[in-house]
Image (cartoon, rainbow, N blue to C red; front, top):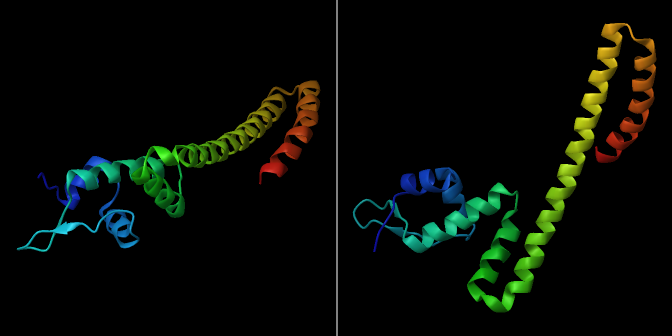
Length: 145
């Protein structure tokens, strides 16, 4: 069996060593085997596979409880496919809402830049038009705060 150090797993997964220790502490991975002589963690291939999954789930912003549910469903297998799908789709919807909110913020910034561009050019007509558009954008911005 191949054994990996915490440093190797950290580098491979992109998760910090404290995060790996925390994931073991909260039961997402492990218990991790220890080297008999040094007591240092030794991760097996199965541990690394689980950690790679956790790294991806963390990258999409999934919380510990949902990670735990995902891993439990994964262990059970096909009979939990619907639960896995629903869990992932809930997170996809959350990300879609975040993207929509970011688009609103981006629209505000661009419109505000247009306003200042019109002022810089001394174009009162463009400035007035931009000011009107900003009123609508500000209402959308208030909704995503």
